[in-house]
Amino acid sequence: MEPPRRRRAPDRLTSLPEPLIEGILTRVGFRDAVRTSALSRAWRRRWESLPALSLSLLDGLISTRPTTVDSVLIRFAGSIRVFSIRIDADSLFRWRLDDWLIALSRRGVRSMDLRLPCGFNINSSIYSFSNLVTLELHGGYVPSTPVGFAGFPALQELKLVDVQVSVKEALEAIIGRSPRLAVLELCEVHNPSDEPCMIAAPNLRSLTIVSVADYYAWEFGELPCLDNATIDFDTYVNGDDFGVFIAGVAHARKLTLSTFYYQPYIGDILLETLPYTFANLRSLFLSTHFEMYGILSTFCLLRNAPNLEDLEIVIINNQEQETEANAEFQNTQWTDGMCASLHVVKINDISCFLNEMCFIELVLSKATALRKMSISLGDECSMSEENALSKLYTYRRASPSAQVFFKEK
Image (tube, rainbow, N blue to C red; front, side):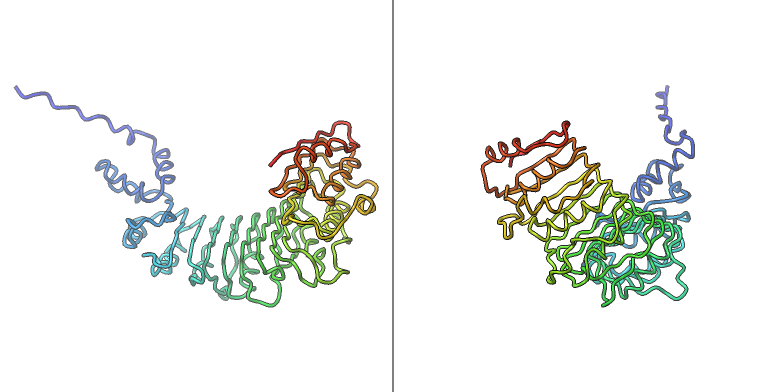
């Protein structure tokens, strides 16, 4: 008598609803989706009929050969929802990216993330990805826009890091012809022109510009929907008024300003007055020296932000105090109604120099709506922690609900 045959376990995956199976496979990435071919005969070609696929090669695995990518593009008939790749200087993918971009430009890619060597020429077919919602470029050289470039009608998020553009007009076209653009990050983007690049986007809500030296490379057009702006320049010593520059982000509700060496050469262009107010501004983050120019700039911004609620200041390069701004001088900078809505203040990395302590004392004595002030010491401090704490608690508080929190080193 023959032994009973072992009953094959039911294929529970296959019994799942088709939409659920498709949802799982479109989320696992192309490698794992293709590997499902080994599950059973029923799964052998299932991945080829998916409506969309994510083609991610950011990990740079040597096991993934260019021929593997070619095979996926040939056998897979659906759209490629996500394309992301890292290409090093000696990468196997280096010489195939142009072909893949051309092939993918007709596959409905919605999200693209390219990590490229500096100066790597990006094929002009990148302008053909009309379905892009998110575009992220690290490194690479962006070519001029082709004749008839209509823009990216669906693009909502653009992030460029260590990118070179052939002409500033290319970047202006990408930004200006993306009517739905909401998030823009420009980190160390090289503008080859002597003229600043215009940033104008009617629906932009978040803007980040980080630059070591190209402080002159940008100017702002209409940004009526701007909610959050970050401006981080290691150097800003341009002869133009810095106030004119930041006027372009006056609509923001949250503003971050970091100007490491902001000290104009010409005395009459210090940021002491502004021809406008930051009426929408609720949160302000400043990273600056607390010398005379930094103090004047800080007071100028506070005077022109009548609805400010949260203020955070990080004091940088505070090993010594070069110029003195005592309590009498700082008191002259305060105006009626200033900081009337200020609720929270954070001041980080102080050295307990006179300028810093006078500012802290002034804010505590004037901000009638203040609820919380947090203070943290930096690596170098001009007095002991005990003396600093004792002095802080002697300062008069205009707000009866104001609490002071002191963080030691």
